[in-house]
Amino acid sequence: MASLRKLSIAYNDAMRTVLGVPRYLTASQMFVEIDVPGPLLALRNLMYRFICRLIMSPSSITVALIVIIHVLFTLVL
Image (cartoon, rainbow, N blue to C red; front, side, top):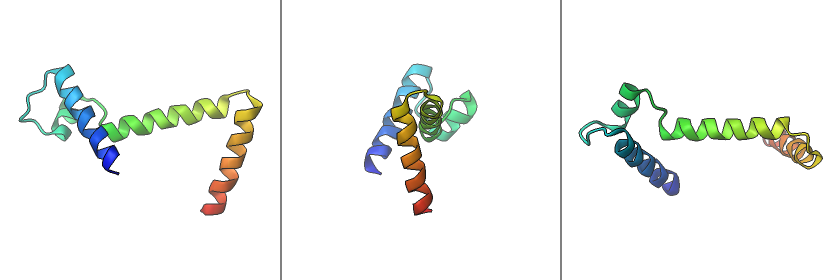
């Protein structure tokens, strides 16, 4: 969790620098006012797109891995 927090801080600082947002705005204000996804939303979107690409892959290896992961995941839940 600590590494995710550090990544979130780095993302916030980079967005402030790129967008020229003043330091007195909180990160949540910055993301709401400029309509930019926050770090957790950006990470969730990246993971979703990655999983979608894996599911749509014609490769037999990725299909086999997806089936195994799905079976293991349903056993845990």
